Image (tube, rainbow, N blue to C red; front, side, top):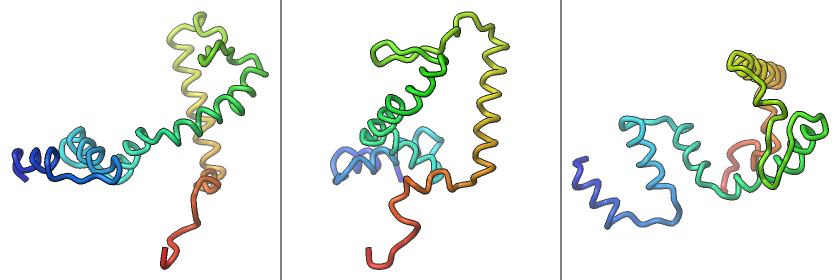
Length: 129
């Protein structure tokens, strides 16, 4: 599509029921004109306040509370601080990042995609919906 036609579509002809169209076009523009459905979905998710609010609650009520209980983090207002961070050297920070990545990989490999099934609306496509 030519530039002026796409610009006209965006500015005058695009009818929006939600944020989806401009987010998808923007994602494609940001990735040299092509992106897979996961990249587009991630950008849609980044604009979804309900998901952000959901994970803010998870942070406050679950993970933040557990890590505070183990004296790993401290909280002041809405901000969390990793206890002792200012004492770590860059190599230690990288080692800690690696350990976190290992834990994530281990957890995911042990449980597969089942770790997110509680967040899915349904187990799959339901005819007639």
